Image (cartoon, rainbow, N blue to C red):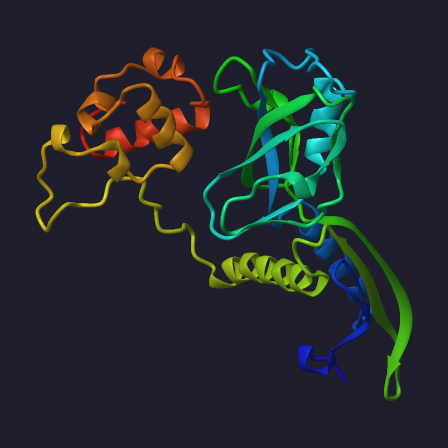
Length: 310
């Protein structure tokens, strides 16, 4: 008798806001490690989360500075800020701020949070102000991402901004164990016991479900057997039924490009598609916060619109 997916039971042995222990059984022999390894990899690397990516502190010009009256140096403050775990409604980056003075320990709960933003660890220490004349004013950029992104991969937007290593993954740890079990008279089957620890911005059960959905999507892609996916459009949305348009009248906000790329172009005073088409590759390389991937996307867009030869 062959086991079917419908025969498998998923039991919750223990669960709270940040920890879950689940039992998946019975599984065909060998499936325990196959599923356990796959789920663990996806849980730790592929779920989206929010993390501080940079901070700006009043009176600080670089990461090796000190703030008068603050016990920690900028590097230590950055390490503390990196531990803050945010949950944000939406997908756009947000800015949270600090404005504290006097002798006190500044905690996460002292942050001023915009609407739709919450903090999972409000007792996290940010800095220690030593006397009544001490003052700490700062802003922190919080963005959505995946996995771990070192600070070396990003450039500061301006002088005085300290770029941080960012841990986006909402899953802190995953452990699994495979033990033998049986199903009726059939023996030699697998029982998968998986434990998930999160940062409280996502429940362990939702993390497990999201990881399963991701894996299912990849298996579904293999199942279709198609040779190629439909080419993703990175072109502007048509302003009307006609395909003819004037590039001077098309603003960069209307282009199907990542938000970060559009913001970088706008900061560089690139207002329209016509402005963009006039830029050489060398010009684009000089645009702050515009990486190699973004430049390739722009080239693809211009070529598809007949505004670039190669």
